[in-house]
Image 1 (cartoon, rainbow, N blue to C red):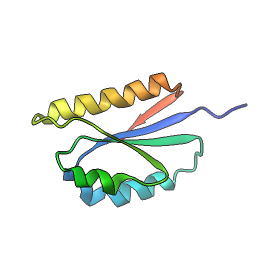
Image 2 (cartoon, one colour):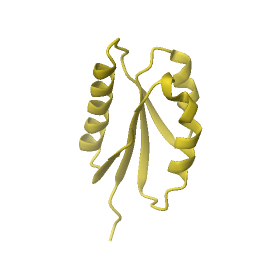
Image 3 (cartoon, rainbow, N blue to C red):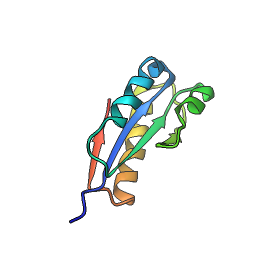
Length: 95
């Protein structure tokens, strides 16, 4: 029997760069192995996007908005669409 396919997704911005390494480390330590990680960068700073990229994390750059609410909603909608369109069985949102 195949293990369910899990999407671990999180909106992020340069405001949260202080905890990026801890986040990535905790995801790497997951005991479950059939998952993908997607980060949606909704920050103004384009340099932060470059720091997010690595071989185990898919990163999507989202359009910046002055409204934090709009940035979060757009980012979560992108993650939801990925979960639905790429046939994930579960979507774990990180905050």
